[in-house]
Length: 430
Image (cartoon, rainbow, N blue to C red; front, side, top):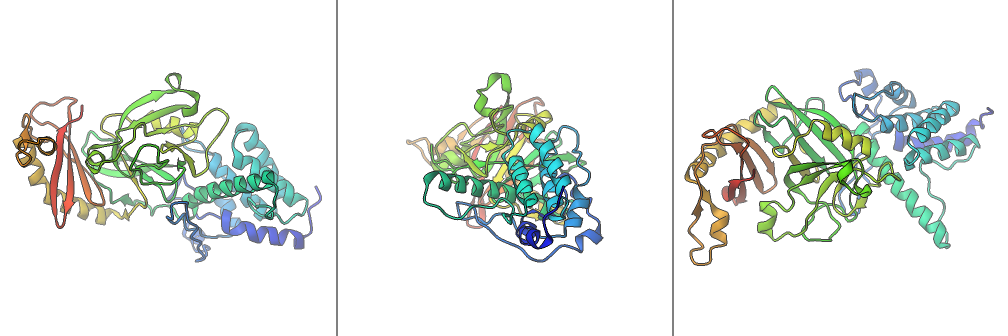
């Protein structure tokens, strides 16, 4: 195949570089040699999402570095490697390997015919092969016809998806880092999920030897109007601390929800006391005619590709598994996380045990008009190991009863009042 002159490819490549060069593979955060890390540029871009939150910082690296990082196209068991292969295709373009890039794009389109970004990759390869300087996910010049404007908007949405996916490579979590939201996990809580809405990234953690360890990360689509749900129909994804209530297989779902769903307890007890409304917030897959959705596309759910939702559902139990949805994840290294766990546990444990042993139910007192200051009581319990989760202004504590071991779970919701923590809900949830 005849290659276009370098002078024609160069402008295209310069447009491509800031968007597609990644620092490390999303499925292997610890695999980047220091020599490759030294090639990273300090140049960063800060695009914004529709709700004003900054999107992923992007870091440019050389084409050869990205090619090395994405040469191994295999994914861990039960994980889809399409995202990594997509970026590999763009790395081939930027390196001038158009024949290899086309082969990669054509294979990806064959395997995932409804993956819009794969189709876009193939189109970009073909444009580059003709010597056109269209650029990565390029948008045509503004035009008056409505059809052209709609195509323009669609490409911009796909470009936003590409940038969101790229962020998992250009700025992954530091090796061994743990979200500050996961203060402590009881031994029976083997999985935890943290959702970063600014990055459109879901992180799955597996507890090993008492420490949450990052197992996988997935791109996802959120509400059309971003995050911060407060009312029914607001097209936003909720923020806060939630738990998976059940798992639903594809055979029991409408095609809209794809390969499966994990339902969340929105609105939770905190949300109800804030007056938030709405229902049916799930983590679920995509319909058969789509591989993935653009970053802002759902009615409020967290939507993953079907391969990713299958992987997520495999070993993620309902009931005790927490899902923290936040705008930005604060990452702590292992010593910082251990110090936080010790500090918060020491601060709260006495109050948690005291409230459980007294059987306080402050939520009942709020609804008792005759004696609003007198808390109702339930059967007292002695907490076992604590799961402690935090979000700005609130802490949720989950535990099983040490008095009657079994499947009964209890939760306490604590609200920050100035420098003090006040119990606002306590009760069994299973």
